[in-house]
Image (spheres, rainbow, N blue to C red):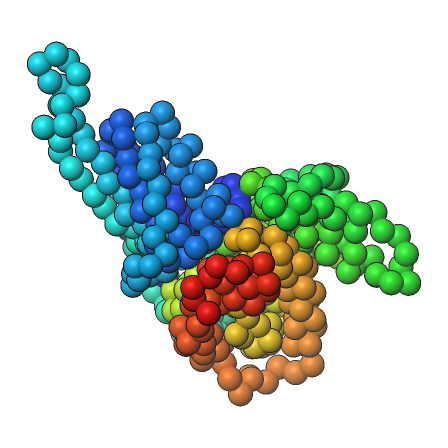
Amino acid sequence: MNSLRELYRIGYGPSSSHTLGVGRAVSLFKTKNPSNEYKVVLFGSLAATGVGHGTDRIIKEILAPAKCEIIFDTETEKEHPNTLTISCCRYSGGEDGADSQDSCDFTSETFESLGGGAINTDIETATYPHKSFEEIKNFCEEKKINLAEYVYLHEGEGIREYLRECLAQMQETARKAVRTEGILPGKLKLERRAKSIFDFKDNGILTDEHRLMSAYAIGTAEENADGGKIVTAPTCGSCGVLPSVLLLASEEWGKTDDELINAMAVAGIIGNLYKFNASISGAECGCQAEIGVACSMTAGAAAFLMGFSLTQIENAACMAMEHFLGLTCDPVYGLVQIPCIERNASAAARALCAARLSAINDKPRRIPLDNLIEVMYKTGLDMHQCYRETSCGGLAAQFCSTCKLH
């Protein structure tokens, strides 16, 4: 498994696959192949929801001032649903000093955006020797260390400062969001609601805990939808779940930043297991791979903050994912807004509930986390394509009359 630096990424929304990952691929290709004209072909989910997710915008911004032709190919099937091919010609000067197409050096490269901002050309670094929660748990029990200490042992102390930087960005994003009003970009013209939830004072309806957590989760997701600066946890679309519970733990439970960083390490190791053994891509496995994984990560982090055992942390992570199995990725108009924003608040509440339920006993669950991760992956692959970030199924289908995937 890779470093948590590859799981938690600071970047701009609205989509880790469609903007962060694609942006990294385009930047890499441009650096290696300077040209005055490019052609980018988007396939699968990138083609189906690229406009709503801002994929074409980020490509043009990165390749500017060069000319760029973008083709949305919704017909050709690729092995990975987030595939793009970038090509260009590098021309040598003609006799009159102008470019000559007769000496075009054509080059092309295909990339896959794997989720969470990762791309298929990333160099794999085996930071962790263990590949399952069972192996990690056995190692921790043998060494008499907790999951945060396990992370620091294998990552080195430098990871603490990186997590501190990510935590600071999470806090800044969430606190900015609950002070911001306005309309989100896109044809839905969706009004921001985080500030009104944060300011809501009728405790007969919402407890302070639920109000704060919901405001921070929705606010962070709104910042992401607006192209703001967020931290993938594990993706842009699910970026509000973990921060909302961390800020709640700070403001209501009195947890210090050092304690929150330890919880982020625990959440990160859980997220890494999903990423390594399954997927965190909505285009590959539906929203269960984004919101579901974020909920599982957050439940484990909350259980850790509550001082629970390794088994109870695993139980919390399991309960959180069990109730998101089969969750479709169906963004209306391809925008990371409906139902994505509210799902962050719902997942945060479920994560906290799962963590508290795990306090009931310290016995292992019938279906351990490793098996659940396997089930999540198989479930995702079994989903019809229209439910995997194509905006052709589920809620999105109510607004799509031209989809060919039904």
